[in-house]
Image 1 (cartoon, rainbow, N blue to C red):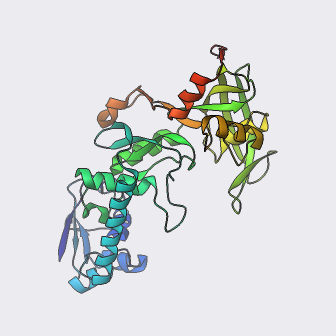
Image 2: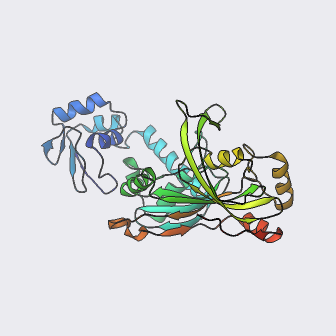
Image 3: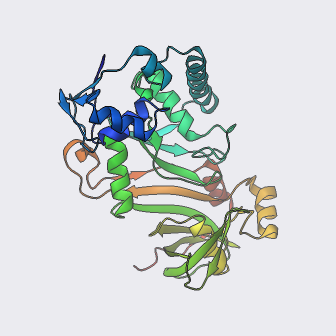
Length: 345
């Protein structure tokens, strides 16, 4: 018999979901059969599997060591132990590779990091190394997470930025943290603002609305009429400064769709400078030669949080700002710009 005590990162989820994580190779039918026969109990009582777990709950497995090892509950199997060590090495490698990234905010539950352009937020392929692996590597290195805890919970990034977009990425260090971030992203009470350079002069603030469809094969999106399968998007922008052939803008992302900002601004004739997918080659080549621009000049600059309570009160109505890449300032300093002021709301 094994007794498992529920910790903070495991609380708040259904018992059956927890069991699937603990015994990854066990089928749903097997787990429900064990629950019905009271070979798996919750706090000494028969359970259905739908119960929400709380910190301190006791899950008992009246199963043989061989059965638990077979289904992945323990690391006694040499092959699984080797795989686990490889995974841990991958996290350490990601942390070493990306180094000490700029952490904008961190508390017990949430970490917000200023991602440089060129780093994937999440893996696109099995061999990729992403910010998600860096996060776990960082938490293991700092002692905020143990290898044992990874068995039933994995910290993760909660929003995505394109590889070549820089700026703030929200990460859940704990299950409550991940759930809270998901909640404020889902209900859109968290306001997200971007800084970017676009081709040409944008004189007035405006709201763009439209629909897009994604081509999974090419990983591109295109504007379309309202149709089945199309996603609605809203983008609010305002100019901050304009230069000889470009405008520094601020954009509020009111919906979060793939490539939304890049597609919307390209659609109105003001593509993001450095955007090789939706931008203009002549402009991109000019900025690459003149300023060393290697990726789109798009930066997740500011987050404005809603009223938050309890353990998240330290983020309540707080505004966080992430420093833009050095090339942003270099362009502004060297270009002969004329301030056009803040656009009217």
